[in-house]
Amino acid sequence: MELGDVPEHLVILGGGYVGLEFGQMFCRFGSMVTIVQRSGQLLPREDADIAEAVTDILREDGIQVVLNATARRVTPTAEGGVALAIDTPGGAQTVTGSHLLVATGRTPNSDRLNLEAAGVATDAHGYIKVNDRLETSAPGVYALGDVKGGPQFTHITYDDYRIVCNNLLKGKEVTITDRLVPYCVFIDPQLGRVGLTEREALAQGRRIRVAKMPMSHVARALEVDEPRGLMKAIVDASTGQILGCAILGIEGGEIMAILQVAMMGGLPYTALRDGVFAHPTLAEALNNLFLNLDDLRDDMLHDSAVDELPVPEGIRDVLNRVTEVLSRGRNSPKT
Ligand SMILES: Cc1cc2nc3c(=O)[nH]c(=O)nc-3n(C[C@H](O)[C@H](O)[C@H](O)COP(=O)(O)OP(=O)(O)OC[C@H]3O[C@@H](n4cnc5c(N)ncnc54)[C@H](O)[C@@H]3O)c2cc1C
Image 1 (cartoon, helix red, strand yellow):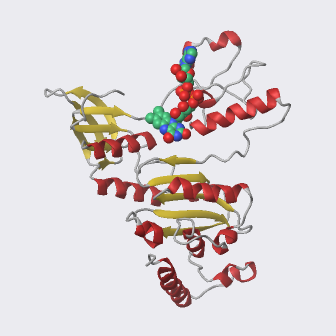
Image 2 (cartoon, rainbow, N blue to C red):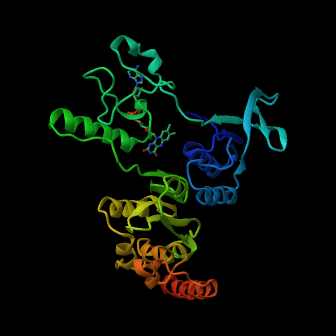
Image 3 (tube, rainbow, N blue to C red):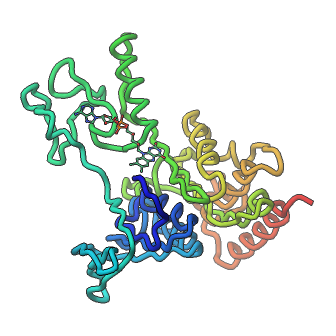
């Protein structure tokens, strides 16, 4: 993508991470930007609350976001721009702009390789089929990276290499099974993600607890004047293990990595809730994030013996308010 000029009005088709990153980048270059998304939320794989917070940030930056919009047709305009015809719940509309960026995903070019001749099978979308050791249907042939389907990230491609290298050259038996897949959406502020979303955990029938805290409660975020976003973590209610997190906020990818390391080491959330982190770092916010677990904010209520006790609504409200006040005091910016 080599442009000599900054587009006057960039229309982006697709509200995945590429569309959002490019959208915010061109918005900051000075373009008017409209993102058109087919589904009812940007970043459709994320939890709705995270996607909504991302949308709020982009709209605050001045980006127009059109949801529930199915693209029908692209035609040139008399001014040399583009007209994108969309169907929305409110009827047919046209979005016009000077440039159009199609960011609706990528497809493998495996159809040009005559893979059948080598006995390498692909799926209906052209991705090369592999097992958990990245072996294709042809003995001695492996597929690594985007072309095998699944999560498409540079670090996953690198880990694919590590797996094949270890198995082939070092006689090891490693697989992609249960591999953690972290990623970061490089909007500003970032969205760092790893593990299960709340929706995925519930779909798996897991009993979970959810910890959420706005970045406006994080001292460091206030100090650097970027209090937008929120932290969210999913915890297994029985074991206390962290199952996943979404950190939308300043350096969200780095905070996510702290939680990822806790997940890799099998640490329960209490280790982060009670750990001592330097003030005023972003990391120290993990103390308060896990105090916010599922509204049951009193430590004693997290002990398994009393977890199941019914807490009358009035008392729960009082506990919540007390913890919120305490949490605000502890998180107030350093003076
Ligand atoms: C706009 C954008 C932003 C991204 N941002 C991130 C990010 O921030 N973080 C992240 O982790 N991932 C990001 N990704 C995804 C990341 O780029 C890919 O997951 C990664 O590059 C996959 O590596 P790969 O080696 O499988 O494929 P590629 O990097 O695509 O490499 C494949 C290579 O094979 C070559 N090739 C193709 N066909 C043939 C052929 N027939 N013969 C010979 N050579 C061939 C291609 O030219 C290319 O050089 C982004 C992707 C895009 C499009």
